[in-house]
Length: 174
Ligand code: HEC
Ligand code: HEC
View (cartoon, rainbow, N blue to C red):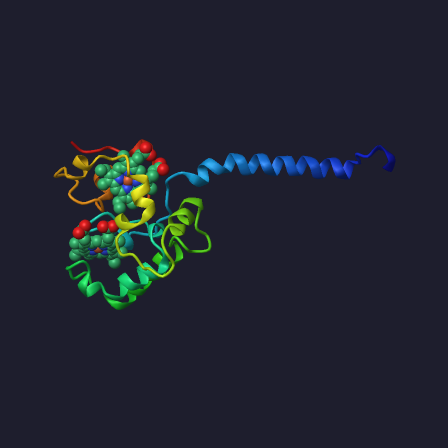
């Protein structure tokens, strides 16, 4: 029955292809949600979330984290030094989940695409993606006492310490 044009083999290939496309589409929104992977365990949040939000590693490229983790004794004017095995373990987690890591999701890749390759920004709030995502937040809001600095993600993104920045979890403090 090779004359009919559509053989069972062709048909099943077609069905598989359509199925795969539908699957890819249904996966797209989930993959694009504002959720960033966080290092496993409590170490990261304990060490890097005690003075401010435990920033998701996917908000900066690995080179930014390497530079930051190499100068912790003078971290934005503070001493955030860590003992050696700990520092290296955190650096490894940051590199593994950075915006330019091989397994970065779509959003992380977009963040990365907006950071010039010859720079290693230290402030997330200075990156193009951050500015783009927040250009509708008026100036007077940033000046509120409970916010203080744009880097204070958790003031508005209530679950930032879990890497969650979704729209539904935003609460702007009065
Ligand atoms: C002793 C307190 C302290 C600890 C511990 C600390 N930081 Fe910070 N960090 C600061 C201060 C202060 C700033 C600057 C805040 C500002 O001026 O907005 C800062 C800023 C940052 C920023 C820039 C945020 C922005 O504005 O976009 C990043 C990223 C950052 N820290 C990552 C880390 C990481 C990673 C660790 C853990 C290795 C860590 N911090 C531990 C005090 C700390
Ligand atoms: C003044 C409150 C405020 C602060 C502080 C803040 N954000 Fe936002 N953020 C918002 C608002 C409002 C939106 C827009 C919500 C929307 O409509 O998606 C937003 C959107 C985002 C989005 C996109 C969410 C989505 O659904 O696409 C990301 C990612 C994000 N912020 C990350 C951060 C990070 C990282 C920090 C800290 C370095 C931060 N934000 C600090 C208010 C804030």
